[in-house]
Length: 362
Ligand code: X8Z
Ligand code: ZN
Image 1 (cartoon, rainbow, N blue to C red):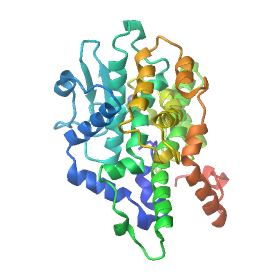
Image 2 (image 1 turned 90 degrees about the horizontal axis):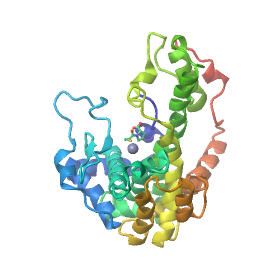
Image 3 (image 1 turned 30 degrees about the horizontal axis):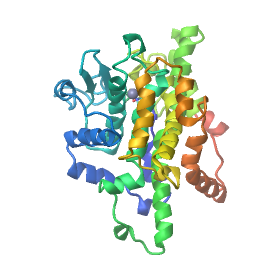
Image 4 (image 1 turned 180 degrees about the vertical axis):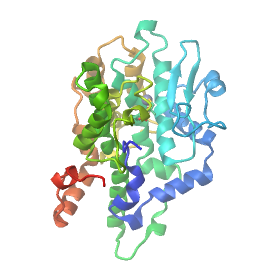
């Protein structure tokens, strides 16, 4: 609805559709996993790094499955994690299904829970992240790891190479093609999100500043959508509609810029943890599963809560006090190279031109 993730159009954007593993992964998840299995899987990832198990209260008091009457896109199902500030009382609220998207989300939410647990010994005032993007990044680092080729294979979610054999594809190029497909699948999540992450708080902060007023709430929303995301509504909109209000975080008054920063930061943290785990090779092939060294480095940050400046904690892990896009660029480089070649071969222009901007809904 918000075009915040573009994974749903993977079928038309996959570089090598014949070798796309995504439908297989989705089918395997549905066939083999229950909602509980998905949650256990995420827990298992964190404990393999040396994090504690989820608490008894977590299992007893969380909301894991959609109840009758609850809608998928409603507040009840919008995934979130809660620190009840009582010994062992941490909960998530999510409607878990066996799907790739929910596999990512459950790792994200459990990242929050692990953060809550790690800083629980701090005085209350420091039981918070050093900046909001840190809280949003932890679980996403786990996502990147669980989606690595090695991890998907270990979980038995990938097709074996024989079943993807196609005429004309040698083993090596087949491997490359499948990797590009996976990078595209993830880019449609992580990269496509960035402009949307910016739009939400650009719009909101302009409302707070009085630059966007009630008489143009919706028009300004769509101007930003076009400017940053390059998208238009498929049906006419007017000020009788309030489209920003459909995004949970607007009526719930939850900041959104933290996700924008987190989507960059998570790659930086992931890269540093991969280095700590002794990973060699391409960044997107790194699986942190079982690495106690990586777990220790990560826990060091989480335990501090907000008792130290984020720059100090970042420096401790990455050697830098700056959040940079170097790691996200490194991660997607093979796809970037492929896309540049593909676009130049097909004479594609990048971006959206006046024809799109001036296109009006009839
Ligand atoms: O709201 C979330 C998390 C809970 S903190 C599931 N996210 C944003 C969203 O769903 O819009 C994660 C990605 C962005
Ligand atoms: Zn979150």
